[in-house]
Image 1 (tube, one colour):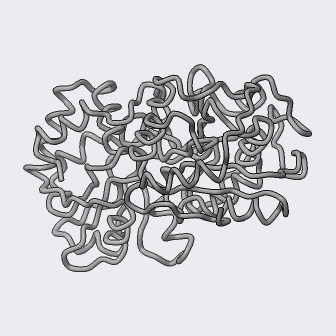
Image 2 (tube, rainbow, N blue to C red):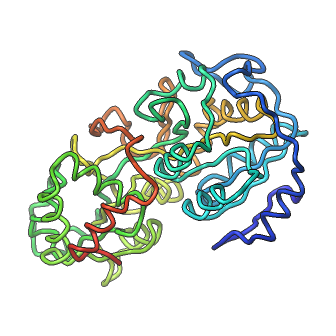
Image 3 (cartoon, one colour):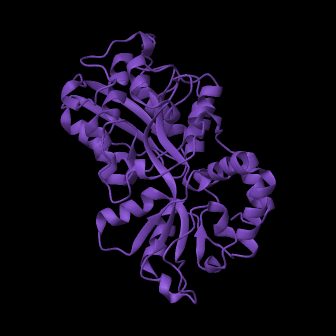
Length: 376
């Protein structure tokens, strides 16, 4: 198998999966992860580094719902750290990966790396995941993982208000000293009419809408979506990166404000600290919902001890810092400082929300968005 194999970009072919399964063979380690011991130091109350953990040797295979630009840097760094270790990754959309796993009789992959909790919850609901070792579960705050320890967040992001700091004065309004701290006002404040944007087809937007329903009520949420579409005339994007880039570049037809994930702005600012894109946050509502990208270990793996130790490497300080630097996300381990261009998470006031409630399709939220006129 090639060292970094891209089996698909838009869909996973049956032939590609069969080839991957053939490379891995039929060897399955039937030792549950919870019965394995850490190779060296466990995770837990103190922050671990790769030097504290066991050396990785062998090969693991990952189905990734994250794109290479979001996650490949940490895989590369781990491979460079250990000469006899290989990460083989199949990149595709979350739903493609989950559906493929559900169709497989024997899983070629050892773990699923998901863009959001919904895909991991879908695997859990179908008895595909196995429980993680106690030290891994104990290292991550309960709100950032499955409530029974079957998956864990690895990095986090908040919903945020992105805006172009150079362009606010282009509008007819001059009172831009403060932006609303209540997400509901972004649908009613006349300052945002015609200059605001969002990305309604994404899983994170549907999760945001589901959270709004639970926190504000369905009728209030429907009114918010309908008003964004009809009164604010929100500009709609199909990609988070393209939306943030449009806010940042500031052309005549580009939005000045965007509702999106914080890390899209952080990635731009990491590349160019003088870029005009900025972020602000609402307070204790769905507009600043904190969610995670995370991993779940499949119930059939090639080497239980190795897979568990690999997850520890993702959660150790080295792995967390790499993903902060490369993708602008927040760490999920207490004691690891955020090193990006956004406010520390302690300065933001996200609502308490059980991410185990998210399902993969978030169909009810998707239907609400379409029914109220904001679908793409």
